[in-house]
Length: 500
Image (tube, rainbow, N blue to C red; front, top):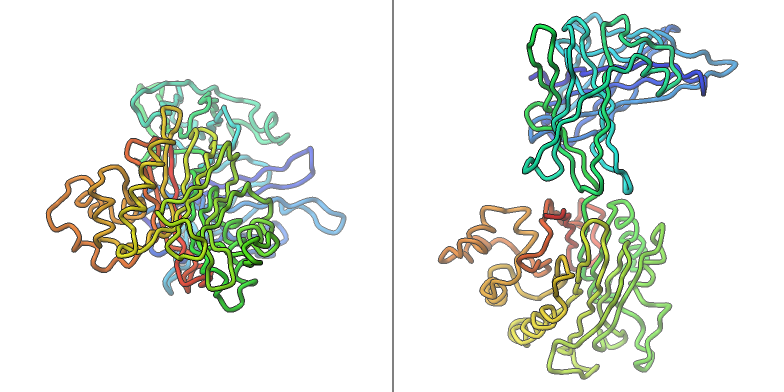
């Protein structure tokens, strides 16, 4: 494939708002993560502009959609651009690539609707990759070259990864541009582009997959299946973050608490499990105003629901504990010591907080924010108590149970082996980032598997109960030197999940 190519350009003028809207869908070869994609364009005044494109969706590991769009209002001192000349540019790894119509630039007339890129006769246009929270109907807009002699355009679709399929016919919308945009564009337009449309009723489904077929009057069938990978539109995944806060031992502590809140907002985290949450000791009575989970929560753009509890005196001046913050409703919560000791002056007194969270389309999820002791200081007994408690809380109404936080066991070490041998909980970061190693450890139970984790220095985990109705889809470390900066003596870990 070319490094970058135009899939379509759209140029319309709305009578309702007296503005001209330009949009460009581009196909980009994924040569590196850091890249710049833009459209260089000029209107009838001959003044050239740069319009940045943004990532619109991944097709596979090699190809991506990028979308550039803008709306320009009519003003007394600024006419509309009218006809537009343009080319698209891709800069990556010190190199530059263009699609400029072989040096002649592309051109699209004012208020003409859509123009397909070279060698495109059938194309899904105006599509999204994300379903809105309450969305039940997905519109599909298809552009077709009218010279094909189109007889029928149809959509094959599924909401369960093709276990079951449905088919919907598209309608030819002669008044499409007028009814949707109050535009005078014709259908078909002078570029020979027809617009067909369908609405797919998906109900409460998490994900929709679909592909498009076009049957011509010569009984030929053309397909648009997203370059062999289907078109996929889905709802937001569930995002979980874990982080040990280091009990107010950081330099510039207040700034770092703000840094954590900013990351939660920008990353769209749904559930946050915190350990070494600190508040001033105050003769054991605590001081809520100094509680670090409360401070982080109040610095979020919209505060979450918060449950927290403490277990022992930390660093001779703090009540040290754990917390769960949730964007979604916490229906119930509990805290329990999982250590034999409940002495607040003993560092080996360990309390865990559980929050039962109702997540839309996922159901009830039990989330345990945990900070257990080292192996030699009672990990095995504490993990056993935590497992039993989690089993008591897990019933038919529970979609998933997660044990999250700082377990003070290195990946592959004796404590980790105990988790593996329980055959009840699995390491979700490993499942997302090293699926082959995960299979050797948790599925095959390959002899000597621990050596695969020799270089894995983690002691913080999300362990998901087997049989839970969740599947991890991605995982990454956060609060590194290059990702929001260090805020603790621990890294944070961010994972996304979808329903099974």
